Length: 348
Image (cartoon, rainbow, N blue to C red; front, side, top):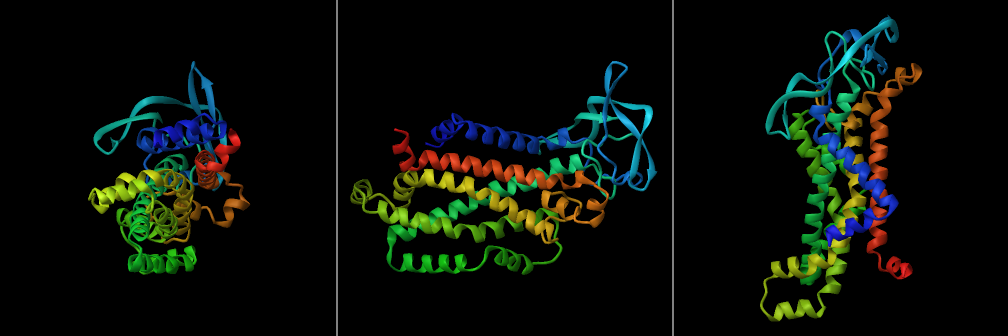
């Protein structure tokens, strides 16, 4: 059903555009170490707030323009100055997919010159490289978090609807309690309950847990209603008569009949996880230096000089968040239109 659902979405222009956009984003995130010319923590204090370097064609090959600093934040290209771009060149070492050591990169420029496709930040770090590495954190948090959320939501909701009684009553009171608390305040309260500064890997896990904890309630409530309806269906009653266990009934009968909703709900909910991580990192409560995430990069761009000096390239992480959220929302709307029975009747 999952494959068929996405195939139907790919046949619609909006669905296809959204899937291509998300596919490109995740491919770039997966191969970020290969595409990025520099590491996230590599600084160049002599080239702070360097503008995006221009490209030029000289001597029969693609090169980047060389700039001279005429002011702390003003750079001008040197007439005739250029540095050749080397493709598949050797650079810093990394591991492909976290497993295979390698040191080749898509493109590099011979030192001491540097290539800044999207400019540099206040310490001369390459914004393009940090944007790619930041995508690994910002995009994966949504996928991992929603997987945990949908798993907990399905288990608690289906058990509440299937058993009823005190199980249903206890589960729904907990759901109502969580849904009654504003999500942002609950997010900040849970984050503030832990240490202010923790290592990046622990912070990543902490954010996933917090976002999953506050997100499962709405899913559980809807799954509970669907389970109440499915509980009285003939195939469920027949499974009970045959003596099948509760786990088999949930996975073989209730899950397939709620799977379409779970897919649509997950697609529409992932943007909330991306925005949640961005909000925490923007407020200084999320991913910490020297790691990179889109929210952390935006927090570093809130300095007034970014707007006064037109350092627009530091706001690109916000554009990346915007594109990702829009793509997920469009794909979710398309999937919802496919699953919605009313839309199917209208299409006939």
